[in-house]
Image (tube, rainbow, N blue to C red; front, side):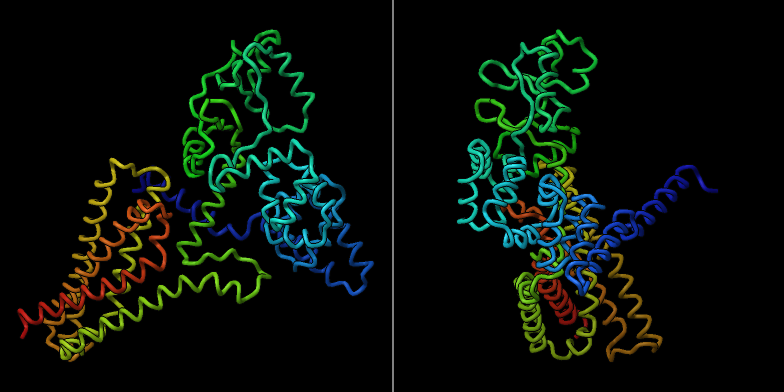
Length: 492
């Protein structure tokens, strides 16, 4: 009889499978495919006038954000043509902010300094920082000399902060007022500054500029206009300094659902705000970097990037695997010289040992990295988490080692699969060897994330080729050592 909980689980499981299956069938993906197809057709026109007419028509029919994503799929020369056919400067700014660095670089080559200056003057300072990074240093300096003095000062101030810090994520466009300001005065100021989008939270300062509280946007509507902000403000529970890592910012915003996180200096004076939108972008960047590290590549995939450039992004990681394989071959050669007769039959099981132990190690490291990323494991819980994973690894080795040994023994005894060795000896050696290899892999998978984290390296590296290569070497060495010792002690 199916219980209510079972029904809920099955329902959630089906929803999960449907969500995974629909990743490439979503409404957004269909929109991107349709827009890309239309752009490709337009750029393949043989008549240049028709070509420009079709591109201009497409640029008017779709939003700049959709066009910004579609441009990433176009050849470099076509991206600047699409940009030039956008209807107005506001659309071009939105397009520039939302597209990728390769597209911006391609468009920059077709623009002069005055055109770039106009774009930078129209966009927020925090967005301009990222856009200017796609210019050469010399050209970036020239553009900064031409833009508005106040905006140039804000951009230079933001560029001083580390790329992966709260200072780099924050925006300088927000509303802050002294404590005695009335709600009516705040409303008038917001009306007079339509270019500032952040109105969901108003920050309250004292006479020295120190942060004292905040007022949700709703409070400006439900309270009388004559009330001062100090009577309706709330306490600021969470704030950060500009040098705080982006990972800590993401943790704070995600846990406490903070719509706008204030950034203060050493004197507790408000210097910027990290919006929820910036945190979402930071999460996407972290996810991209983590996936790349797990896959063992630093490649930023671009369809039109040169093949050799993409090869160089992957090659350093693959070198680790290459040298790991050479060391593994040397280990096998060494043991072959000592136990030539033993090697004759246990070598057939090396792929099995490497595959099982590798998966066990990757499972341990992946679970720990995920737990560290979502904040489940704290420094006080580290020992408990490691002990739990060691126990699981040991149990896995015992169960699968015994199962594998029994299968090998049975197949050899029944004559279904003969390896040319004593069935009992072979079954025991394979069973104990797999147990030892799985336990070694567990130790490596458990210790690697904490080791990399202590060095200040993203723990996701623990799931990449470095640990995989070390796991192959250590697990195989443990397998041969255990098999050799057992053979010498009990089966000679």
